[in-house]
Image (cartoon, rainbow, N blue to C red; front, side):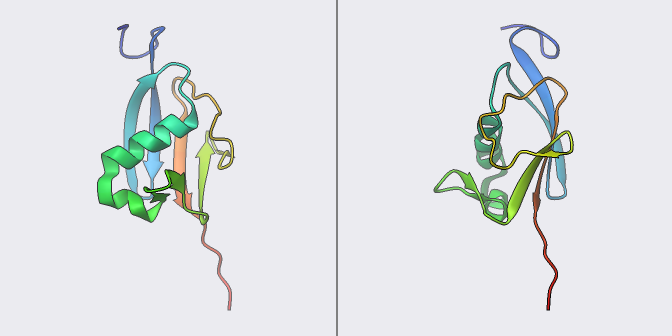
Length: 95
């Protein structure tokens, strides 16, 4: 196994899920889907607000941004060292 950050084998991404912020270390070449599955495992019941744990998917009213760009339907996109990933609910006001 290589060094923690900036090495050939590992990368670190910064994640915000709702109001929770954290960094996660992953294998280089990992897709967004792997990050989401890891978050579901680490957040436990808190994950149910954003993820359908049984299906392993985001709820339809949630979106994922990588470095400020919406990537909700691109679960195979490869993450890069230093990426900032945000998972949030889409709130639509109406009356």
